[in-house]
Image (cartoon, rainbow, N blue to C red; front, side):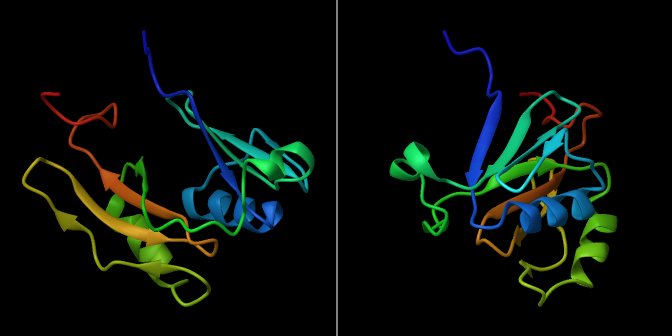
Length: 135
């Protein structure tokens, strides 16, 4: 029986660069980081890791693979503030969909595409735990 999503692994050719971006954008310190692997542990205990595929992992993961079919949803406490900070960095390999938009299901969000082409839906949910209400 499925209990929860526990972690996400994202392949990259430049672990230090994407780690520095993620740490700066979300004001977090990685739990672990070196040239080949970094991991962030969110307050929910969900783990987000970036790694450079080499050896056996290079047979299963491609750092340059297309990323246009999905987005990772991240919930923040203040989506407008984060958008303002990131908007000043747009053009440095980052693209933003536009200012945060209110959705009828209770979220407010925008889409961020980072320098590796990863798409992040940045959301501010109405519930204190970061989850949608009534779900």
